[in-house]
Image 1 (cartoon, rainbow, N blue to C red):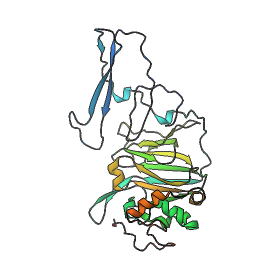
Image 2 (image 1 turned 30 degrees about the vertical axis):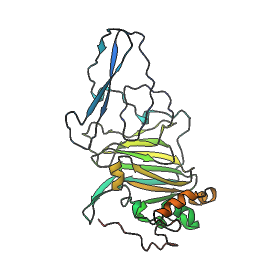
Image 3 (image 1 turned 90 degrees about the vertical axis):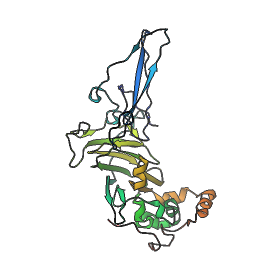
Image 4 (image 1 turned 60 degrees about the horizontal axis):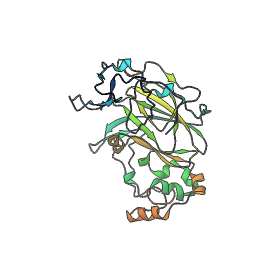
Length: 311
């Protein structure tokens, strides 16, 4: 996890794969015990009493016999000071990364394709690595100078090739009616900015009506929720050569294709890394090729790579 400068809040609103640690200061008296509440909800399915949302109650027990239990009146969401990454600062003191060398603009959408299946799109097409003949990491490791050409990885991976040590800014727009919890492999990122997205419906109470920017030492995360009708901007330095997914951590959305691939500093990767024989053998056992482009061919010849259904 990423450590923060201490910040006092009333509660946490988490999406899939997000984590927080909290220190709770005990009362100086044992006159009462106190109830705490954890509510699980899914904003993409209808209200169902007792199921969505589902509320769990626990008790902070100070151990005094026959002490009354203090059950506070339920506060509305607007009355609670929720943890907000944009208000927080990273304890490592790292300043906002700049200047930005690479900009990546993404938008979460979905569409019905020619085969009648609804798929999710984060960039140009749905992510679908199951169609590849060669895993993306193997292509990055075995294609020499061509590894810097995103075409060799196939459109199915939605590839973005990053230069070594570049500062990368990613903007994610969420015009859908579902919150998305986006996770980046291989890095923590700075939470830089969020605000109402293009065409945002500001009558929704949780859509911020203004753009909000980070402190001079932005909070770092590896997962961040992009609320419906909003956008976020994040930054990271491409200092970890590898093949890294950026995807929605709601599994059904990932399976529908809501992901892209960052191929980071592939030439540096080739110099520093050697593929473990156990990994090579595992791929061969599954009938996958272990060198070449996404189709297992040389150069830009992607013959044999199954095409995605069209829109």
